[in-house]
Length: 448
Length: 125
Image (cartoon, rainbow over all chains, first blue to last red):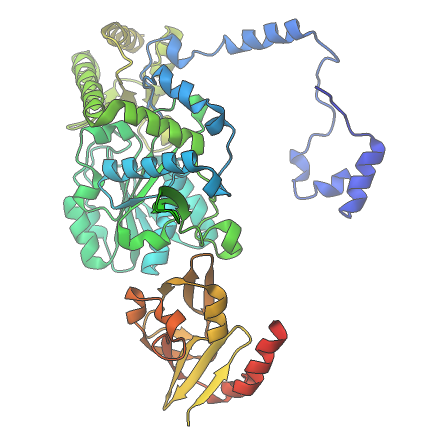
């Protein structure tokens, strides 16, 4: 591969062209104390083998998800992805295609998006779904913005069971939209009474189930309260596999359903790319962000697919676009669709059942340990335990023993006084030996 | 005879008693093509001349309808929710969009009359 570095002349030409005197003026927006003042202290040269050796040495310091008993969840879940999923998404027709701006020539891509939308609508029991968002958290923020557009109200209420990172993304978006966001305190036992807090000025209530502590929530009553006040109910999930077993949010009366689809078809991927799912009632179709794919017929009456309702997107409507998320997680959503197609309805149900059964077994095992209390009355594949001691330290000690035993809640919710809680997730990937290893490591860490 | 005035953005306002009936012109509907959706403002909203009053969406674009005059929205054409195509078929009649109670009739003076508007459209060809 040719590498053509720029020289001083190129550099001054470019600066002159954009009307900037020197490179410092170009970076004037970056605070002075955040700028690098001298060259990085790097060796002048190293051989390829040396670099490989160095980097693989650094990489070996990580305790990778697949290398040890692994019980970390909190919004990203380790599930089995069949080899056929990767094989199919790597076909060049899919792998190399960018977002279909000339959609008519990408019928295969469009058909995949159409199937994806159908699956998401069916999973959530909603009437329409879009072609995917970046991830669950941005989908949630977009849902809040959509509620603002629909209700013309500018105040959102976030449940204390919402994943704190999702709440943070909502608040970040709201800084730009001018929405007021009220975030309730952490709600470990799902005991908050959201219905009592619904006032006529709320655009939406955002509630997660299973929530960030693992509790399942019945949203039916809340949906009725919301409807009475003209407030939209936004239901969030971070673990899509749960929808194979629990009642879907749409069936409980949610107006907008958003969540993370990573759990199906996509690996942990070091935190991304993930795939945001977004579904709503049909009457809100035109206020949805992103794009939709529709089925139609061509001039000869043959079945075909088109991108539709994209007139409100960034490339057409610029500053008045419904959303500035203009593209979708194409390949990640394709992986989702292929995996879900392979599973089928019965397969998903069975996968969800295995997840739940494994988690129940684990909860019982851990609950029987000295100094451990399982806090949840209900859960899907993730639950919260209270331990005697500092959770962050205990998790650290378990990691030293080669077990990734969960997420200390103080990491997600610092300064909330939840220092003795650990969020433990279990999927179909966890074996009986893994559970034994966790129980042993936890017991060991607690008696230190 | 009713007074009808036009904006350079191709909205019209027709004075009927105290109210101004607002819509988009035949030229505008023709340019937009098949109209598939119209977002109407809530009744009672106070509009300022030039501010966004409604959104007209065709297959290819979504465009704002700006208020040609200031005033309060007193009625919207709800039949457009079911049949937005009325704007294509009969933009000055059944395809009207909303009615405003004018807060300042003098604003009409700044708008074009029919002859001026038709001349203006010719310059766009």
